[in-house]
Image (cartoon, rainbow, N blue to C red; front, side, top):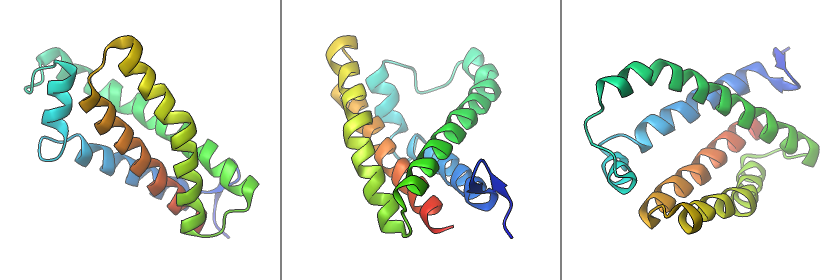
Length: 139
């Protein structure tokens, strides 16, 4: 029997956490969208010493946030009886559309964030939620 973490398979939680982190590193890397994202935020492409020193704390807090997302999404998938990767992706899409997009849109409207940042971050959130949900619904 698989180890259960808050009602979710420990294997599924670990796989979702790893997938989320790998996706984030790739998405925001200089090779994919990192340069455009940093430019849109008005940040330098080369990280400062202060930014480098803050990386371990940021990564740890990001992992906590990802675990919270994994648990809540897993809870919703279980509640809805999702049993396939497509159920997971469908649920992720609607959650993204109704919860993530309006929040990110607010950043553009009220914080004067650039549309490029909105698109990069919103697309990441969609893919990230879909990957997590697909893993949780099938493992």
